Length: 181
Image 1 (spheres, rainbow, N blue to C red):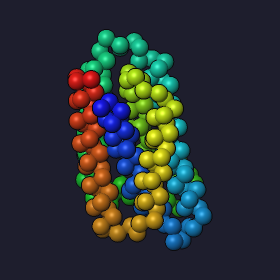
Image 2: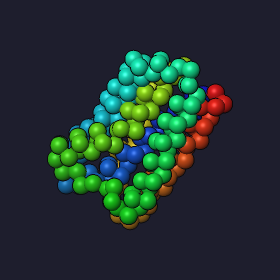
Image 3: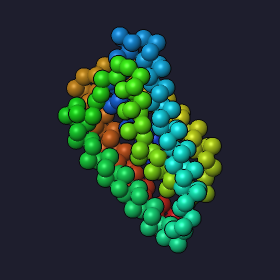
């Protein structure tokens, strides 16, 4: 059960890439679109690994409050994602990705939640490499799905739904991991 919850959290975190991937115009950029999608994916994986290493290094200091820290951390991430879902629906969170610096900056900004989740996942008995691989594969699927879709109203509604569902999944996962695990 624990592994399923963790995989749901990782998949939910990668769903945040969808609106950014919609901003990559595959029809105009062709091969650059693939490179930009990989920058989005690398941002998620690298910041996750940095968060995991930072958590291994410092979170032992609050080991006695492990459940509370996990609950509060995942709840804050989930609430933030749910609040952003409304901005995604309006198209505020969809970016036009036309150069490397814009894609890199957006990738790092979007991966902050993944960084925090990486820190929190150090409390759980899971292996860092398998989590990184799962995150990479989920991000690969979500990014390339977003790149090949046309950025229209329906795609924005779909990405808003993804944001809302991922926020709710992370909220409930924080509750489960914090108090019932």
